[in-house]
Length: 278
Image (cartoon, rainbow, N blue to C red; front, side):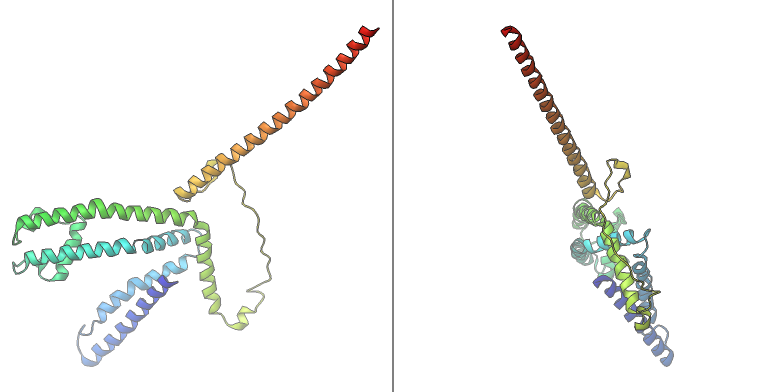
């Protein structure tokens, strides 16, 4: 998929760049002159992240990996909004603290990191005293914290909750699809001789059977609130249908008994008429 291809591209590019820079450093005798350490530090997380791709094929970890990847994809839009907001407030703080000897605002990058820590609650009252205008700085901090804590974080939680429910609703299908992708990748790396080997790929027959549904709610594996609601609606609908069938059967039995009683009354009436005639 595009996500894993991007991770692979970043990992391989960073590793190649790190070795090239390391060779240039060795050739020139410099120490970390060509960013070899930085490239290697970038390559390691993405390389380990590739392990999650192969964990998708296992029952215990596959669904969780799919949930994590789905939630990461779902927060792209809120993440962009977060980044824009942090950059805007960071620029304001950088201007207010510029030239005042504050290490946290010495450069736009450090000011951006300071604003990010503010979003996580990592600031104090003393942080505003070194600014050009403490009132404006305090106002901006209050505006930023209200916007991030109350508005954006709740939006992010809502988005993650919806994505989680959506992925869990189709959790089995998502896991099966991920396992198929992993198997297909391994198959493409096999030689033509191995792919035609009946020991590796024996003849098989796929049979589709209906899934049995149980009335016991405890037997359902929880798969998100949406699926849980659908299961509850199906159970109620099934019970209503069963009660309707029961009522129809009872009504049919009552009509049969009424017809029998009417026939008996008719016979009794005939007998009475005969006796009166005699």
